[in-house]
Image 1 (cartoon, rainbow, N blue to C red):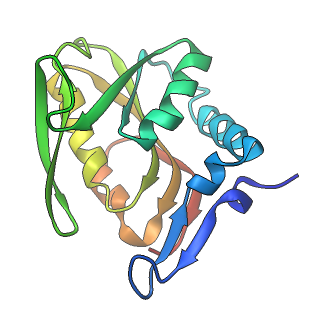
Image 2: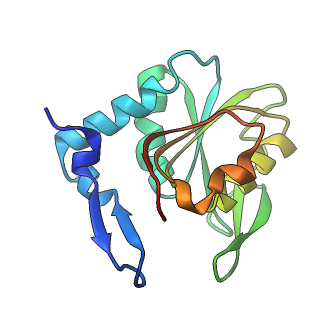
Length: 174
């Protein structure tokens, strides 16, 4: 039986020399890989009491929705600015080359609700740090942050100190 790591395609020197791009589309393109990814992420939540899964577009949707369905939880999307139709709150965050902004519906999380955040990959941690702030602005409590892949060399966990953070696959480099 293959391990989940066997389904991740590694592309050297993309997007620039010295970087190894960890491609999750190869996981998604395999029914065995996708099932294994969902199962392994869900295992990270086995001992957690929570109400809602939050996921950023687009791969947080891909991995978060089936887990929410399997565990009988609600799913809340976090999207790029201007993509949600109702009243939102937003957070700006730093990218490698510039800034971006994400939003969540103002009524998506009620005060006191326990939240799990799921995404495909943690690199520098900026997006997820912004999501934790949005959840807390709405009164939610982040009880777990789970990733399929962690690029440890980019130190994204440093921005998430104080949170329960885990990843299924951990790569040492960038």
